[in-house]
Length: 260
Image 1 (tube, rainbow, N blue to C red):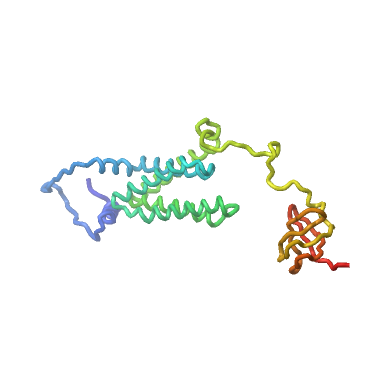
Image 2: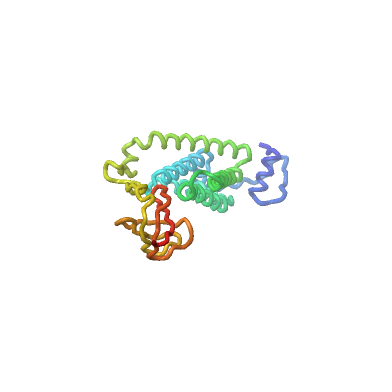
């Protein structure tokens, strides 16, 4: 079966040659049969477009579950294993997927940074998604022609989105997930509080003494209690008289006052 120009260019990239010899007939060609080993069959199976997309979708699903329930361990391990099989299988077929895998890990790290460290969803999260999708598309494009790469990347994205939605809405209700996930609830009825229940507004207008140097934060005695305070002006020395001038939630702001 004759190859198209696009297919010929694809073969040139795969074999690393600048030109190919075009034959009109294979009548006198010598046929050499090579028996595939078990390792070859495993690589062929992993790099099958359908299996690759399935491994990638399951890998991203495991990573998503691990981010939603940090500390569980099992989904994250299985997710990284599937992603590793996806990139590793294509690396064994002489595709330069090593750099793509590195970019995928960098993108995953940026998304984790966005989720656990940086509030909201901004540049780090968007850049992480771009790097992950770019690395995946690179592998598909090197293994297949451009149109096939776009097709299977689209299938993988759709399948991953469906699995993530299923995991987000239905998986938490299953017994298997509840066995791995932390289900303990710490609410105010059980005595847990996100912050102190003390009424800091009661300190407003009261006077006290700085127990430590305030530069600008420190401790002061207001009435008969030790209170963490912050100055609204310059440095206040220890044992100086202070007065509470503002309260914002648990933050108590003081200023220095002259002794009578």
